[in-house]
Length: 81
Image (cartoon, rainbow, N blue to C red):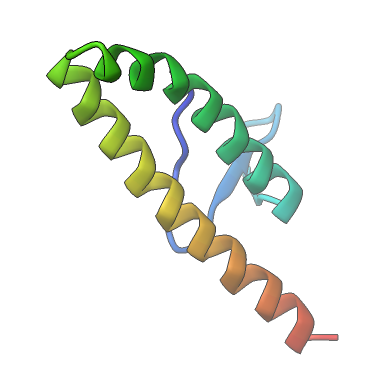
């Protein structure tokens, strides 16, 4: 399962190992990938698997936090122009 990382400033590891700030596009694509991965657990939850429901809830919380970080970044970009 892909995992969304939602710190205050998301960093992307480049090939040399140093971090650079993730673009808004990369953040949104990461959310899409992680949510697509969560679909399998959502299906398992619908069939009664409680552990899968826990994983879905975790994925939704991370997506919520990442969405908030995207909003903050877009607003910051808007204000700096």
